[in-house]
Structures are given as C-alpha cells and as structure tokens.
Image: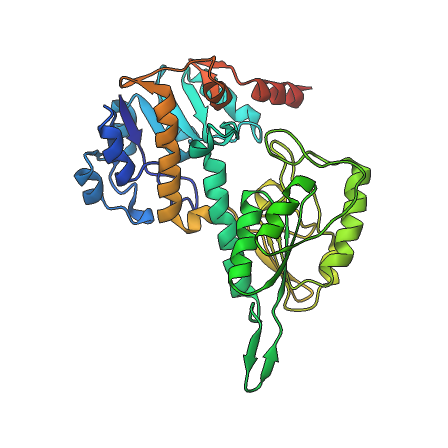
Length: 379
C-alpha cells in the first residue's frame, strides 16, 4: 500500500502527518510513502530526511493524490484538496465530524473512505493511537508557557536579598489529558497549583501531581462516557459558575480545558470572574476553538480586559510542530497496525477501533454518532 503525505494547507498548521522515523518503520511492513516536497519543513523534517527514510518525493499535492491509495493528513482537507481525491481512496485526518457533521457529506459525495483520528475510542487497547491525547499533552504544556510569558510576575516563589516574591496561584479547570499536563507543568515551574473537574474520579490524579483539588458539590457526578465529562444542566452550570467565580478572584493564572465532544464549550469563567481578578492576571482558554470556557474569550485572539490577559489562540500543538508531528505520526502507525494486513487496507467492522474511527466507507456515512449529529442538524 502507498500512503500519500501532502503538505498541510490550513492556516497556521505547521505539523505533518508522517515523519521520517515512522516512514522507515512502515516500510518494513510493506507500506511505502510518497511525500510532497516541503511537507515537513515547518516541522523541521527535511526532504533529505524523508528520502533517507525511503519515501518518494512528489513535486506537488496533485502528484501525491494521484499516486497514493491512502492519504494521511493532520487537518481536514479543503474543498480544493478533496477535489483531488478519487472514488475508492482512503483519507485519514482530524476530521472533527461531530463538530461539523455537514462536512462529512462531502466525503460521501466523493465516494471515498474517511477515517478520523479524533474519533478513535478512548480505550486501553487504543491508547497508542489516541491522537487527541498526544496532542492535548502538548496543548496543556504550551498553555502554561503562554501564561508565564504573558504574566508580569514570576511563577515560583523567590527568596532574594531584596525580599521574597510569592509564588503565583495557578488554577486549571478540567483534569483531562491537557489539564493534567498543565498542572504538572505549572508545578514544575514552581507555582501553587489547584485543579477542578466535575468528575470526582480525577481528584486522586490531580493530587498525585502535587496540586489541590477544588471540590464543588453539584449533587451528581459529572462523569460522562468515553472518559469525557458529561454536559451539565443549566442549573448545575449556574451553580458551578457562581462558586468558581468566587474562587477565581483569588487566582493569578487560570487555564481552562473543559470540552464536551460535539458541543459548544461550557462557559465556566464568567465576566464577573474576570473582572474580579487583579491586573496582570492571565487566562488561557484551551476551549477557544469551540467557543471558549471564558465568557470574554475572543476565539483566535489574545485580548486584555481590565488588566487581565485572555489568550484564546487555536491549535497550540502546531506551535510545537516537531514533537507534535512525531507523536501524531506514531499514533497513525499504531492505527495502521490494526487496519492494514499484508500491505492492504482491511476495515473489520467487528473491531471497535475500526468501527469508531471509520466515518465514511466507500461513500456511505457509517459512523453512528455522526449520523445522529446530521439528523439533529436537519431537524
């Protein structure tokens, strides 16, 4: 089987789907790669490195799409890229089908098979291919660095001849992969850290990283399915927001990571919470791409409100493209180990990983959650 790796065209996307390390390993299992020239440049992977790994270099994207049966990308294809695909080809990328179910109809119309890296089940068996987690790790880490850079104060406590500087208080909302990485990073930088999640089960994980766990009794667990938090009712969310507002007034840096798949991000940091923070405080909203956890976040922008900096930048993993690409590439290789047999694509519908990841098969939308989302969007 030949896998094609075109250069990413989405604005700000610096990652590449497959890195030389992975291509060399795939070659041993009978999978060859054709890579568009310059596809890895933004991630610090040269064309020479790809050639040394055994890849064939293509002059442009059209050449990649023409020669490969399987296309590996990071971001979903643009309409121009999709037009280069032919019936029977397979596409693998972060397609985000639940966030934009109508986009899936384009893959069906093109009569291709589409697999989404953000739809891989979060199970023990699928951990090695869980690209959402690998990229969330980077996002959580980078969020703390952004906050530290934007703050006018040191994060750690400093004892100097001129006196002592108190450690900053960092509060992380959402203790999933990104949140736990943010907590660990802030602790390493010497901050006083606390964390919150509606799922009481993560309390021990937060505390194991040396952070305090903020408890809010909503009367019922926030645990959802697949390791995610469930969506709260309006009453639960209002009660949660009131308590968080009071707590946030004592905090220097807030990092929010709360998201529910296929839904707008819940607003957890109210305008009142922001306006009650002291000047120089920072909020980094990792949920900005789905609307934001902060009521004042401007998705894609960094703004200042009453002396508080609110960072709502998108796609933080792409700001560390070399390691982000390496991890994503390894995730793809792990998935290929399940869906490629003897050099051929084999999609076994009885396999939960295949069933969860396959969005469109030969032009037919087969993903249950996507079909349900489409039905809701039409009603």
